[in-house]
Length: 217
Picture 1: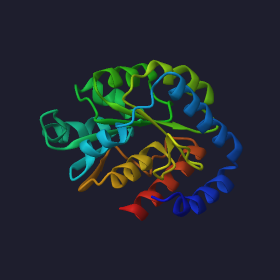
Picture 2: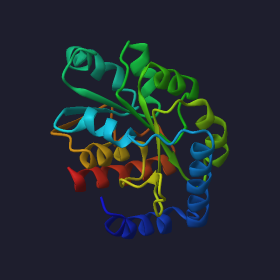
Picture 3: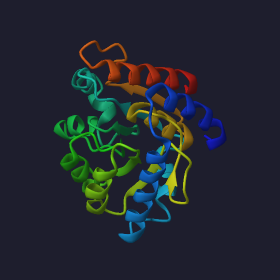
């Protein structure tokens, strides 16, 4: 997605949640500085993502409680020998690893179990780290611990090596990324947009996620 197409949506999100755009911009700069300083800018990481995703059937795993059940129902499709590709939204990484599934990609703003995200990275997952105004300190702690299979994103204006593929929450950013890199088919599992056991703020985020996913699929 072109940033010029995403920006009007982003501005509505900023207004709706009262986010600070300057803090998002700062987070993007911090992420860029860290991955540059630590030699984490790998020129062909985007090509590797495309290789894993383009023309493939992609299963995107959200972190709703139903994920465990959905994994059991789709065990063969999620197996490492399957032709399907698996993208984990943040905390879904832990559930997948417990079920002996290594995601091809992990899309995270570092709210999930960081130890599991680092472990997945070392097992071969490409980690798509999202920088925003609320996770600057986590960026400083986690980015240096990841290997070169990492790429950074922002919801604000992209920088040279901090990208914006579109999307707001971890779940819908997975979908935007899969579309950006040419997935043939996208299936969602472990998503519950009507979860009543969460905070009002989270419910609001899920409404945005549902809207964005419906718009792009």
